Amino acid sequence: MNNIESLIPQRKHLIFDILQGLDFDMADWSDSLKSDSPPSSNPKYCFNWSFIREDNQLIVLNLWHEELVESNGIIFQEHKFKEFAAITSEKKRRNRALAIDQACRTAYQQNIPVRVVICKGDIANGKVHKRELDNEVWAITGYDLVSGATIIQRGVNPTNKILIDQFDLDRSNSTPIQYERNGVTYVRSSFVRHKVLMRANGNCEFCGKQGFTTNNGDNYLETHHITPLAENGPDSIKNVIALCSEDHRKAHFEKNTLLTRENLYSIVKQNIEKQLVKVVSQQLLCET
Ligand SMILES: [Zn+2]
Ligand SMILES: [Zn+2]
Image (cartoon, rainbow, N blue to C red):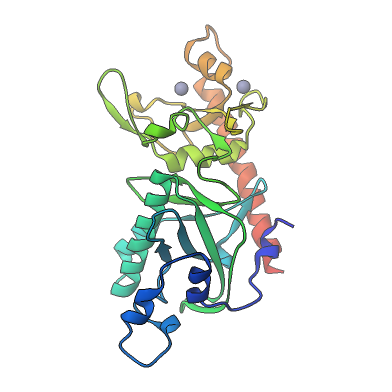
């Protein structure tokens, strides 16, 4: 089973035990303790939302089950921890939000795998009733350097993102900032590109043909700004479409092309509407 309901945690495991099981160094949980309480309840650590292992090879995130979304068979969460940190007045929550934002950015930029502890309980008061480690590997598949918007996706190896575009190809230089030949710098949000790739789910949004498979086994499509950034087109999911390589070239160069801005905008609009229906119906299923 691979749906959201199968991921409801059944037991309440301690974060301490989960991290120890993942080879984290737990010494400071005991060493920094100022009371007689057990190390597993050390307030310096036990309320944190994110943990980075000392060797920088694994990141653990606590996520609420209620915030999982399923679309096109992909299970993920979307967050803007940076924005949350900016608006919350509570210092401790702000620090936790800044830490998890930092962890997500690091995981994205350095291709570090993520393990997720799925929690269920009273979200408003931050009280966990059930807590279990999910046995799949997750990855940060999209991160926007400006807003901090992030996609945390289940069942993805970070070096094999499954859905990739032309900007993901060169992983050794996988910076979300692309330099144009004319010297103008445009910031393309990897969050936006990956939201669009998830919407297309491997098929060209114009002709419907499946993108080709790369050496790594990823599905390759190209993301295209309908109104170019150079013409002040917004870097948003409404202005970006996923196309096969051939259609992408046609959109730029073909004489009397069918890939007009008007046509592409109408396809994107339809696909966004279709996607919203799916996500909402999944959430309704969850509630029953
Ligand atoms: Zn196509
Ligand atoms: Zn283009």
